[in-house]
Length: 263
Image 1: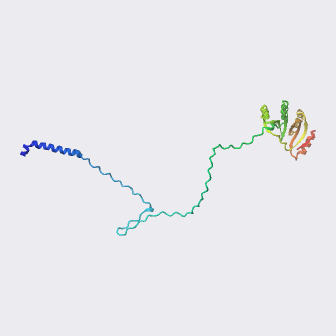
Image 2: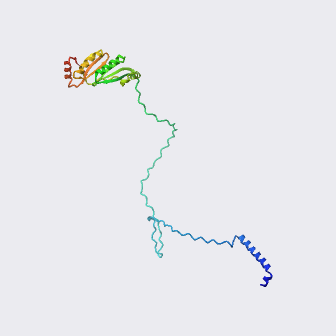
Image 3: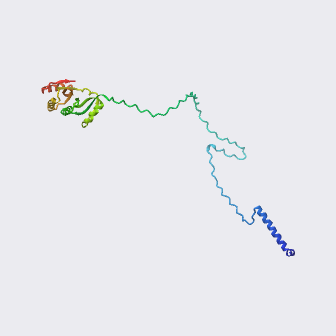
């Protein structure tokens, strides 16, 4: 202790020197004696994972006691597939030469129906009347205006027709002029009337038949139709059934008509 009192300055210098050396060493080694230690993190709890269930087909044999010999586990094999008939051998066909691609064209439209020939014989129907007096009056008006007129018996109706025209264009012009009668164009000739009729008169003038038609209409309302093909206008009664034709003919003759059977 006496030495320390006598040499305390030297001891202090030595202590400072020693501390400096230790500090340099700790600095170079990266050790910090004054840094607090971080407590180690607690281990994370272990979560027990569910064990995958082994399919029944792959379960191993139960464990044998230790004293028994080890058992070799043989894995189960998949069932053998059912035998199938051998596939038919297909012989490859010889390759066809490539056909040059054709330019795409739109699908051809369906063949159109042949258009009606605009030429031929055309007529225009301008009305059909159960009362022959009305048909006769219209025929007189049309003929006065220069139309070629026909009267056609259709059953117990008289149809008024103008024509013939050599082409449809001429017939359509007549339709336009007679629009108020709701005319209709048809081609060709009207087929001959069916059934049996009794002719009671034939005249060359339309107005000459008016009196006889009116008389027949007044006398028991006979079914009268007119058949006009220039120059003759024929007055017919009918059609009449074969079983009644004799009786009708006798009754008309009794009224003073000269009766001719028309087939």
